[in-house]
Length: 163
Image (cartoon, rainbow, N blue to C red):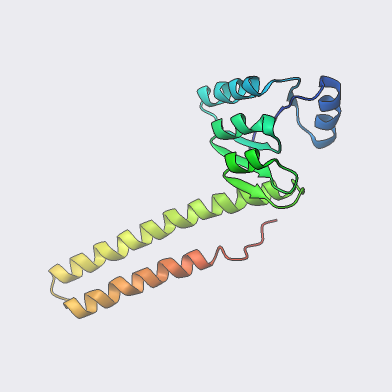
């Protein structure tokens, strides 16, 4: 998915090394205090990285607030972490994270496409109005048709399946 994955944890180094090896995380920063997690995130952000923090506990709340995007594992997360995060997964299944990223990327593309289409339709409608091809009534119909297109494009995201 073209992402750099870094494990920031308060757990012992050996434990996190084992976990990271199992899931394919190459960069591990273990035995961190909450403020050290925040410093690690700020350092990544200073390097112009967009940071998504995934956490579950009270010790993750400051880092969740600092990250550009924050996700909490909701069913096992503390109330403080849930309040600090922007996204809460209601199950403990972190395999939903790639789906979440793909959905957010598709959403941004859809928003950009919708804005572009809307601007194009409005530009064409203005030109046609200046040429007196469109009357105020037909101009209003064209405008509403453009709005319908935008809604239909957004509806394409509904129940989208990402592989």
